[in-house]
Image 1 (cartoon, helix red, strand yellow):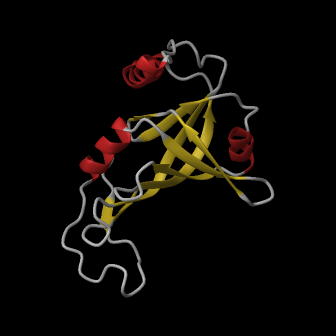
Image 2: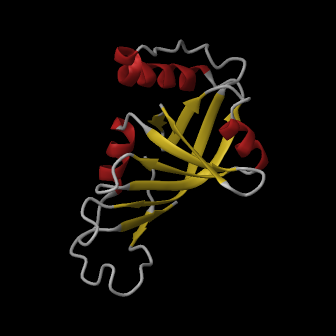
Length: 162
């Protein structure tokens, strides 16, 4: 489990002048584990953003997703690893900033854990990868540097720094 530094995000005067609570990392971590859809924003070589929805799993404080290295988002992270990840809700937001990389063949214990988590979340939707699926590549990892989250923007915007 990650143990981030917890602060308020820097917001202009008048946005959130009297927050009354903060979120815990455990709350945000649970939302990242349970989410079905993650919006990943990478940076194209021409410096324009590229956003794509992905199925992914949050395991050991990192986001893992799979796909071809020929996709636009994969090509982007090979040139510039800086990414952001958003969950679907804007009212109960989770925004993660970090760096992405292609993972060569994952260790068997990690591959097994990822496969089990993918199956738990997506088998009902028709996706149940085998732990050996990523032996030849096709797995990506996002390591968080900062996260922002809230359940009520005017009450509990919270920043997590790793």
